[in-house]
Length: 390
Ligand SMILES: Cc1ncc(COP(=O)(O)O)c(C=O)c1O
Image (cartoon, rainbow, N blue to C red; front, side):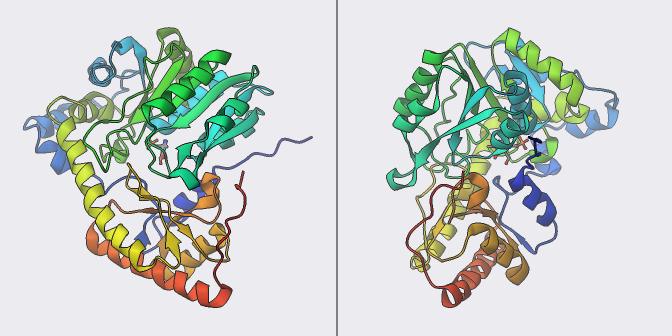
């Protein structure tokens, strides 16, 4: 049977529309940091930028950057770190290194479905386990146990979770580790939203160090507000990092030198990192109050579990329309982009970003409400959510 390529639906809709619509509420990070904001932390930065030679950066990440990353992962050295083009490359390398056709992978749902599509394109067998919407997106441990078998090579989670903002309890983390360990499976933990907590200033703990086959991925894109630097990383055992690096050489060789050698080490330094995380949390906390008031006002058509982290809410809507058609209406009737729940594996939900400037956020939300109300009049309401999309 011919193997049909599965595109990454979420990124396709975003790259097609995010620069076309008037209100982009599809991003999962906060309003980005400017270069001037970064330069304000380091008076020598501009001069050093002017003087830097724009050759290739160190392929696996400059020593300064790998040191800056390793300091935040207890028990690691720079040899445990590979610097990648965003967390997207880190995830790509892990999936393509660990999975071959016929191998089994267990993937948490809802999720950023990069791994879901990659696994299909590699010919792997995909199993899922879910976060349960009826229990505030808590981990369904029974499903987890069923999804991980002797054939499982890889278990993949995203914590804090995209799109729900759920942060696993330590008991949930232990359950994930136990299940992977029992089968000797690798555990990929996408921790790109760690540091973007809404209710606490405690940085979400990493899975790294809880089991010897953990690969913890992260980046500067979300919690640090610096997606344009295109800097991500994966932290893991040295031999596995070397295998990932061997694939990185095929794919991207190295990250951009300005980011790799100059800007990213500053962002992750002991002085600057806390300020960037604080900035992100302020955006999230202030934006949430706007979003929450909006959701309360429209409680007859939307309901939401308050997210614990990330600049995104994942409201369920009570309308008789699927999420892809509804998103399409929002684009064409209101010039607003959000992300449809089906692209995270959950129907009848939308992912809406709120870590934005308030006037922009308010107008985007007003436009969404107008479309929801028109749709309710036309199509009626629906209280039952269809079964999981995947
Ligand atoms: C969970 C998750 N992982 C990885 C990425 C990719 O991020 P980047 O490559 O910008 O680090 C995203 C982006 O939205 C994401 O939500």
